[in-house]
Image (cartoon, rainbow, N blue to C red; front, side):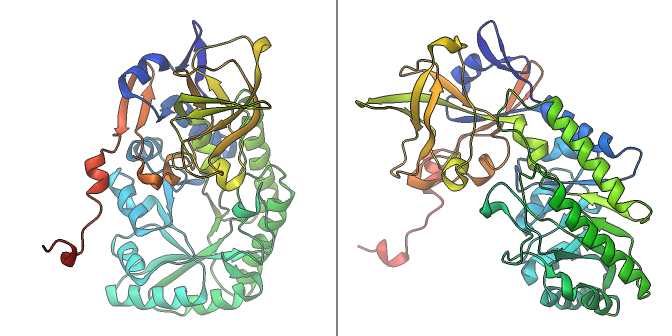
Length: 426
């Protein structure tokens, strides 16, 4: 469910008139709803009540400091995949004991930093990483809660590029090697083996594949215990899908979370392990929109291109994943007058396209539109391609709003580069 709606013919974020907001902040701009973010966190936790589960928000979906602080105030932790994400989570006030470090290519420096900060858990994804972690923990005279991320040879997701559990994917330790490596881990200095983790993909609606993957982890837990090893934790990752048709998001999304929780209860019944989850998209996607302005119309005989001031550098999902985002005008129109448009951006790439022959109300130069459900993997994947500025992020809370990432300036953009010394001579 989201808190974006029309009031008096103008799109609002909670109680904020977005026409007034864009007059103050300009476009493109991301806008997030605190109420939506908070509601999704509570719905996810309530679905598992009264089980004591850990929610580690996958901050790669959206790592803004204010988003992270909101998650932390709701009792959530974060799932990180780099030292930069650890540092940002700590800066946002997320306690170290609520941080889980995932990722297939952790460097020695990143592991050293994670261990030195006493984060909650490290999800190991290769045999070599386990041995390196042991050496680093030993040198620091620390003991590290360690979980093996397993590749169950079961992939799932709405697109091949967001499937992570198949044998052809780079993530995780082979299921066939898991028990042996777990046993080795119990004998390594500095390593406290706690359990297993899995994450098979993203934007999952059919729960058959997650259920099968979770079942394989349950089998591993029982096999490890039969071999005399202690297993206390099971990290079941994230990946639960969300509706990108924003008008449909709501009770059906909440019902799917409840169905997912019921499946997890059934699969893990009687196992006596502490469960952890790493939801990202399902928490933040429908909590954010991207506002843009129409800068040109290119009318052809057979189609009309609507050119926006937002490009694929601001929202790359349609270009990268053929992803759908609803497009709402800021000013409400009757559906009767809709016509087909190709909605594109200003980037010098043919792939800079958001929608083809999308039925929309009549659009004129200067009109504003909103890409719905853009809170996940929107701002976090944005870039300065074509030397375009990073756009602002804005957080709404009831009738108030704050710029939580300012629009980048050209001085800041150019200042990221340095001239080689020999090019400054003469």
